[in-house]
Length: 475
Ligand SMILES: [Zn+2]
Image 1 (cartoon, rainbow, N blue to C red):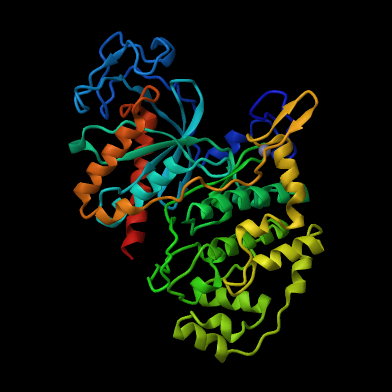
Image 2 (image 1 turned 90 degrees about the vertical axis):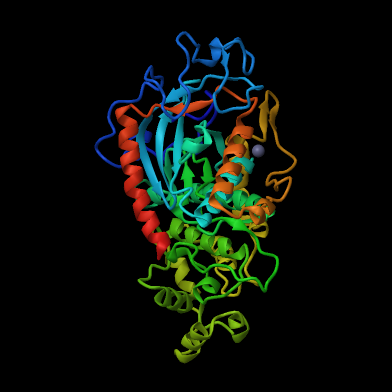
């Protein structure tokens, strides 16, 4: 089982039996066959076509950024010259997130397999425009090993033709949902190292003032070496410091939705993500969804079945209907001892931490940062920093550990730009400028080969998915 660097020890060598698990997990249909060649000679319609003889590979660029092969771009600042774009083709589909379709592609600049995500319906209306711009900015902002970030953004065409945004991220082989429902064994060591990384990434996000709002196993990508990254920021937003400001209730997949959101609380904070992590922790232990209800009301009922009827103080922010529903029902005693039956891994230490996350009252729920100090995660931390992380390194005499095992964001994520975004056209200009500025001085820009059969399949699946998402957004 390959780790990133040869010779490095694999932590979870037995998690994905067989060395080529990637193929098994990437394919969502039977059409994923021949691997892409990556490079294509077909003219690119989404960007300017390079003149004949223009080197397409970075090694041919004279070694310097924007080197000898630079050609003027018809839609860029005439004063600045950028190299001709390298073309790429989608390879095979790997998933359909809440907002976007993801494909595996080969980066023609270095032959590396990466993930390509199309952000759909960007300029449909101002709301979607703001949502996509926020996600794009977040992906470019993140610098943390347990949070997925943008490696690149495909070169946009000139602004009149600018309709779609494609983001390149690191390619991960699977996600925690697929791992949980697979027959592969999940040991206590796996659970500890996964939970450690989820909380490590979450601490970083929360320190940047970002609420993810859709933490679920399918949004936790994992590699065969058990490296985990939080992904899909389509519902993420900046924490709202003003408790009088209303926040949307349409967040978090129902099974992982915190009780305060289920009860119609108008203002919530980072504790909603910690609740989701608690549900996932229990799911890792028991390999089944902890609260699997058919409706939000039943979801709340399942939660109170386990935690008992909450005290009145925990209902202060609930909407009238939710409060009446709870008070009308029979008084339920807590039945937390059933958590010990989740699996053999449900030790006192595990259940102690789990019960600190699954607290009804968000004000009393443990924070992501404090959860990391729980002794249950000591082994996960040690394992992660012994052979998985990028922050520590080995020397002949042993391991040199970082000073800060769980770093916070250097700066809070700023969303002040959103206030000045008043129209779709203005949003389009801002996003176009953002992508162009983001690319400046970096590697050879990438664009897609729209003539390839793979791309046409990609677009078809994207269009199909987009129509589903837009119908959902209309509701
Ligand atoms: Zn480290």
